[in-house]
Image 1 (tube, rainbow, N blue to C red):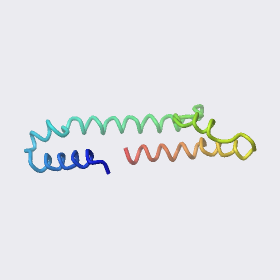
Image 2: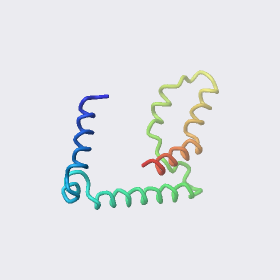
Image 3: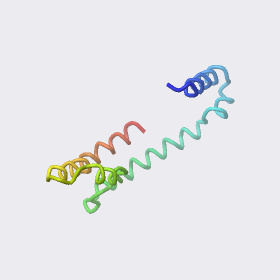
Image 4: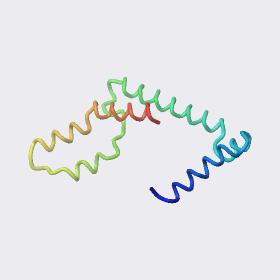
Length: 104
């Protein structure tokens, strides 16, 4: 690990234990910021589910690595094309959406 990361963790732990609640709200993170973040996640989740349920939307999730896949994989056999199709398939996008919804 990086020393800076350790020192920031120690500083945060000290602030959480050493500062009164009002100061923590100002220095670390306020309840309003936490609530806003939760609302953003709920909004994004709803949008993603709406896009996913639309039968006319063939690609509800942007795959940021699509260009890297097309350049990195060889294009010598039919199996290379099937790998790209697998990596960008709906099930792969559903897994990505699940991870986004559950962990963020």
